[in-house]
Length: 143
Image 1 (cartoon, rainbow, N blue to C red):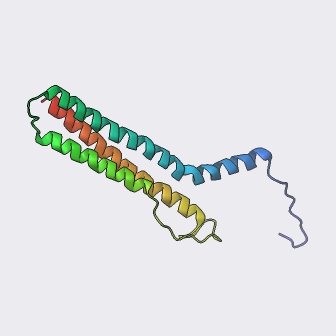
Image 2 (image 1 turned 60 degrees about the vertical axis):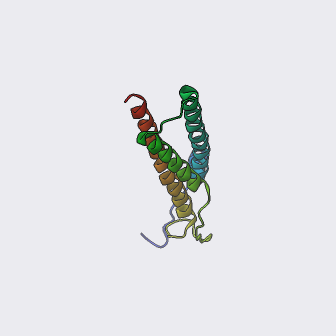
Image 3 (image 1 turned 90 degrees about the horizontal axis):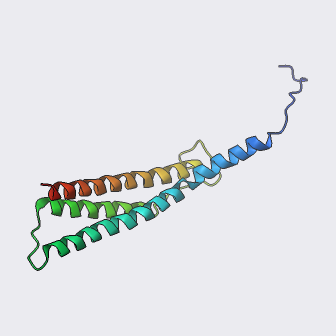
């Protein structure tokens, strides 16, 4: 390319700029979405074991409640699910270089991605433990 040659450019279209802004909003909002998911999971993880324990007590009546290993395993799984969800909700400290936007281990983009990934893994474990507890309860009921 010749030094005297001028490259003609035009400003980006409004739609391109809007799409780019929405993309960056979605990257920055991932951790907030994980927090909303965690709130929903907390509600379910507290309600289901509580309802099951209440129904179990109503069914057993005055007789003493016999606990099976599956039932104990189910409540332990539900407790672990609750702990994982709470662990995801509490913030984790990160070292962030506010001058770096991307392409660095301490950049702002890496912070948003790592924060969302951290919460996602904890919530995934939480759902796994919760489903394992439900499976144990169903196995105990239909055994």
